Amino acid sequence: MSSNRKILVLPGDGIGPEVMAEVVRVAEWFDKRRIASFDMTEDLVGGAAYDAHGTPLHNDTMARALAADAVLFGSVGGPKWEHLPFALRPERGLLRLRKEMDLFANLRPALVFDALIGASTLKPEVIQGLDLMIVRELTGGVYFGEPRGVELLADGTRRGINTQVYTTPEIIRVARVAFELARKRRNRVCSVEKANVMESGEMWREEVQKLRDSDYPDVELQHMYADNCAMQLVRNPKQFDVIVTDNLFGDILSDCAAMLTGSLGMLPSASLGAPDASGRRKALYEPVHGSAPDIAGKNMANPLACMLSFSMMLRYSFDLAEEADLVDQAVKRVLDAGIRTGDIMQPGMKKVSTREMGDALVQELEALAA
Ligand code: NAD
Image (cartoon, rainbow, N blue to C red; front, side, top):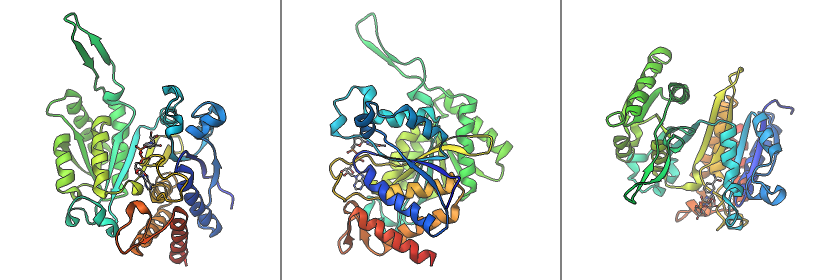
């Protein structure tokens, strides 16, 4: 089938190519079954790009990413490239993509599959049925604010400075992403800052409230201090639908939320940019995990985080909600059937390879589509 859905596939290093191969199989299954088609191009990133071109991201690849409707990213890095100067390290390839695509909103769902409830360190009743989404501002805040640095004082001691800076447009564009997402979910947003001790936090709160009142009166909005949010995430995470927060608090809270689910091999993510004239956003989808050099090349990696990232792409870049549901359902059924890669293995379950997990998924997709 021909398609106008242009996807750039960047498998990267380590387990990246292994998990991505299973995603490509699923994409091809959609095409073969004439459910949805994609125009997929593959390219190099990270250490693989360095080996081929002497740079972790070739300019041609960058141009392809900017021209694509979505980028599917595997993982980068590994011991082979650790000695390289900072600017040539595999991770720089990913950072350049994020920067030049201006991906300012990072979406991380925390979703607990019933079959994996035992993988969490929290009590089953606290996390059963958990389905929340953290939207983290990714290109502003204290990680980028000026002035920054370390200065030497007259008395020989030092002073370290980082500055939290947010402008109205930066807050509004990320809050808008959260409100739009909430409308496709349970219609609730919790905006998180430290308005009690930070002026920028107080302003964040006011801007989010204003936007809600003017453009999203149908969405329920709550404000919460970041310290309380951290506590609530482990106390009663099911109270949340969509959480929107700044770069620093989002960094911490999204890792905290991720660990509610207990397994790195299961966590997808999306990074979104601003919508163009047609309403389509630049977007990059990637598993949260890294290149796992300890198991790379052994056909052991869990492809489900990458698969769920693909499902997010269907949902958020192409509005293919039914097709995304199909992938999510197939993942759920494979887990319910007791099929596990090593990282999520439990007693009495069937341990499978990366490839066999892909086989099981395609089988479930066939059954669901029959
Ligand atoms: P990692 O996520 O690669 O691995 C941590 C542990 O989790 C390892 O034991 C690994 O085997 C396991 N694991 C991770 N993903 C798995 C999967 N899908 N299936 C089964 N097990 C899985 O993190 P790390 O070891 O800290 O980093 C390794 C390399 O990856 C480094 O070079 C690091 O810079 C890079 N990294 C890249 C990204 C990215 O590409 N976005 C993110 C994090 C780390």
